[in-house]
Image (cartoon, rainbow, N blue to C red):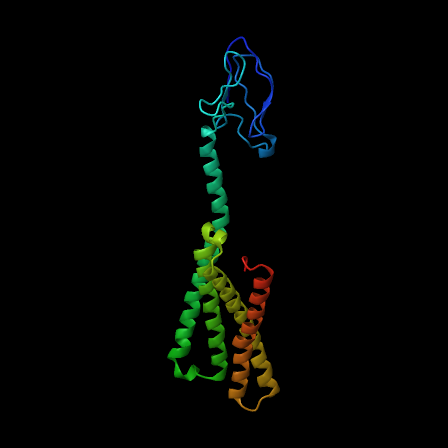
Length: 233
């Protein structure tokens, strides 16, 4: 928004917002929206303000002595844009958190049933229990990561040690979750093929595959990330 006084004409000028002002007869007001903003950009305030003095020069700042541009009218629009960007970033995270919460509640109810009835205490249910525990651990760790890290820009910028540890832990739980899905299929295959004589031996093997295997892979992953980018695990 540019104020002009009668009888003078202001030359073209590019200000800090890359807004080019063409010469215009006075006392008309000249408005121009940067093309980079797109066709939806408003052609009227909020916009920057430059005042043309009677001698045809731009008004100077009282302290710095440099041409003065007033951007105070733009701050409200910028704040609104920042809020919209923050909402676009955080909304999917809140959806993930809600989904994990629902899953955790349902899986907890299933575990209560498994532990409550004695007749359900068998090798097959033991495999189910470990799978469900991996679901819970995965949900809890990712909820903690989203709440404590992903939704906090300061933590993402500082990248403290506890943040990196939580990140690695969440990936370990996720890997264990997929490993126990594999163990479910492996258990059914082994039972049908009768590759093992005793059920206890089979359960021990599945425990190694479901919990220790992902741990080894996660340690390798964390070491590689630490060596390649120590501040960005």
